[in-house]
Amino acid sequence: MSEQRPFDVVVVGAGMVGSLFTLLLLQDPQLAGLRVAVVEAEPLRDWSNTGEFDPRVSALTPASLALIAAAGCGPAFAELRQCAYTDMRVWDADGTGSVHFQARDAGLPHLGVLVENAALQSLLTRALVQRPQVSWLGPQRWQSLERLAGGRWRLVLADGAVLETGCLVAADGPLSPIREAAGIAVDSHDYHQRALVCIARTEQPHQMTAWQRFLPGGPLAFLPLSDVHHCAVVWSLPEAEAGALGELDDANFRQRLEQALESRLGTVAAVGARYAFPLRARHARDYCLPGLALIGDAAHSIHPLAGQGVNIGLQDAAVLAREMQAAAGSRLPLAHARVLSRYQRQRRGDNALTLHAMTGFQRLFGASDAMLRVLRNQGMRWFDRSGPLKRQVVRLATGR
Ligand SMILES: Cc1cc2nc3c(=O)[nH]c(=O)nc-3n(C[C@H](O)[C@H](O)[C@H](O)COP(=O)(O)OP(=O)(O)OC[C@H]3O[C@@H](n4cnc5c(N)ncnc54)[C@H](O)[C@@H]3O)c2cc1C
Image 1 (cartoon, rainbow, N blue to C red):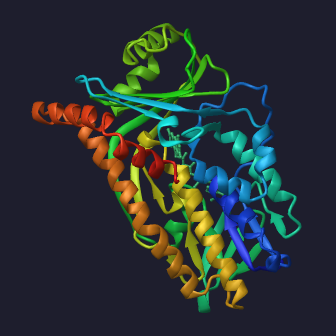
Image 2: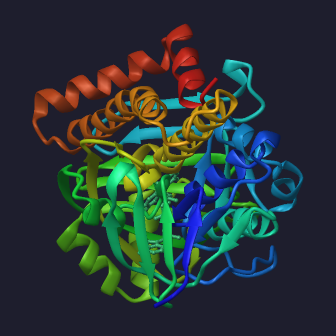
Image 3: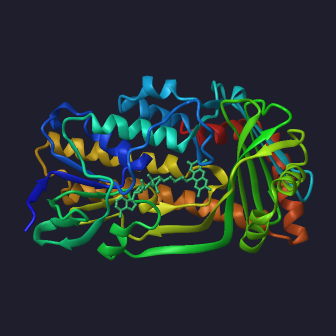
């Protein structure tokens, strides 16, 4: 029989959200003696600013950047290669509607920062393993999960270790094996699309601008990277079309990309390896069970068209860490029922709104109905000239 190890908190999944949650929680000096286990399936990654660009990127809002700083990682983050983008241009392939968002108009230095996921995850996990309270139990998966009396959970890991805790935090991504094993129901919607991602080198510089064109099959985004001639491409397409594009040789694929972006950045001179991700919206009906909380993509996954997925996950992490710190201050158990229900109340409604907005945008821009096309193009033109409303939307989208 393996040793049974009690932990105050067990976090499963050290992606960007699980790592940030743990770091934020441990910022509270009251929790200096906390015993935290982190279970992660993948090995710790090294990161170098001189390697090839990682095709998975995130557009972090100023609100997310503030959380990274609050977790004590601001200086290390500043060292990562990144692109603070000042503009965003969105236009409709089926008409003349377009919107130009500018940080300057809203009195902001930038709209957000584009960073490679591998870089941010490596930074956060490296900070995590240095915390004396953290036992890093990876790379490995758990094998069984048992619900005990009194809101406690027992997790048996692949190496036979048995963990027991009254506070289990699942940050294990969109398929969340913990959520599934715990029996939490999910509402889901299949977009029947895949996101094709790759790195592209362009003839013209990206001008610190995120470019997004809404095509009938789905949006195409060119997201600016630290080198002005490199962008991360995220192209959402119907499944069959994504499959066919994935099969093209590089020369033909580059040509298709350039046409799809209407040559706004000149020719596409080179592309890296292509990866495809099925797109499905998911929303857990409950974020919590006694002694258990879901955060990040484990609780909700959304369409990448507005680049909000990780940003709302990082807000979950911040709210849950804050509520648990408040519980510690009142000498309550960290996963007390009141703590978990306050967390769910603060996050589920907001996340549901974002999820529905993304699905609505995806449907609106995917619609081929002539009347809808006219209306959405007129709407974009009107919105682009709307001044205060546009400024307010920029402030909301950047978390200000
Ligand atoms: C194509 C695409 C483009 C996107 N672009 C953006 C963007 O521009 N901006 C944005 O905000 N969001 C974007 N997103 C969404 C964003 O990538 C996710 O919201 C984000 O990665 C979620 O982070 P997470 O930490 O919750 O989950 P994940 O990143 O999925 O991390 C989960 C972690 O759990 C681990 N794990 C899983 N199972 C187990 C197990 N059984 N045991 C132990 N560990 C386990 C995994 O190894 C992983 O490290 C995009 C998504 C896609 C698909």
